Length: 429
Length: 80
Image (tube, rainbow over all chains, first blue to last red; front, side, top):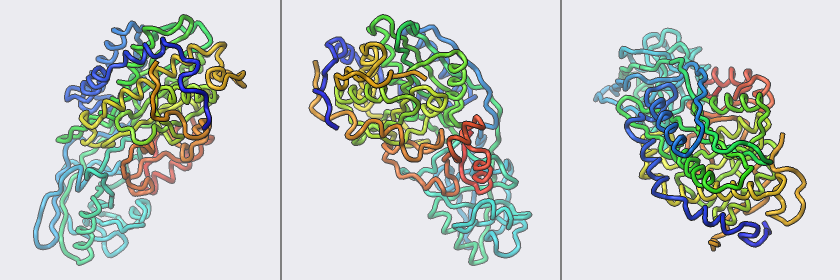
């Protein structure tokens, strides 16, 4: 793209603000949120609530008027014990490691006590009392049709680069049978034994659903008195620890929260008068972006019209940060582009499947920024894999975007980008 | 003023971010920039949302109810 000279339209105050972004402070926030005390921050858990309280204190320290906005979340999956799983191929029995070789499917029924049964294949022979290997290509729906009286179902699943079966909380509701997922190599060994007509399997499936109360944190730093009201958002919840498996959720999304807090600190200290600034640290993203859905609905009811910048993943920038936009965000994108060129952060249009979509869906100008994760929803999402350089780069990007928005007369973006009159306000529903 | 030598900003038209492919759901797999090889969302334990945005909005949900029902029945992930 042919653009103006880097830095055009940006005064020295912006650079002074950018210079105050602290990599140490960003990293410290990630480390704290990913710590043992917050237990992976799954919605409704004591660790999540403790994290929210800590974040409320952080926002208050920044001078924000802080509110907690509760909302209900139903049927959050909770693996309440490490599954006990053993497999005998007819010659030797061994245990399977939870999280790597075996995990629980979200469609699984709860089975607390281990159940032993011979191995079988769904659709082949008598299912009663057997653990059935579901052939590749057979849907779970079809497998149920072949599983009357079965002990449970065994599905194949790939693992990530670290060998983990990553955790998801948003998914199908429980079905009638225990359903386990086996890493591909394990699956083939079990399937081979099943096809040979030998071997047995013993497993439980300790998974339950909990109806919980979630809570968004809102902090208002500056009133929305002028043309521009900037809302910075990031979700603070994670998929949560499993018994015996810490899942720190450092990149997803302690990193995004750290960026938002740092950008807020910098912007609140120096933005021009008249520009509104608020923060939403969102709960319930991992169960379906429910916190942002709740917040977007509330904003719409009040007639608010913020420009939304959401950060989900600022841990491992590779080539370019992904940007997805929705709503009337043309002007906001122009500002982000200018900010990217000024701070040297490359950007690329790409999916950011996060809270930004809820705000955009409600009609607000919203962009999501995703700058990478190493170790997605797994024990490998640790603070040491969150790059300080990425945290700093994205924080600077957000700060520069905020400053540009503040310096854009009459809520128009184009003058700082092209020098020509803008076709539309940068926000506005 | 600090001027970065490396080119930042969008390499192409920024408004392409308004029409990102595969953005029908509100949760699921991480952004493309994660560089993680993830299982196919259509795999047995996938995590994508489902249905059209219009149908999801109409139902005030991540997912279109009919598409979600299909996804649940087939064991695919579906949020909201």
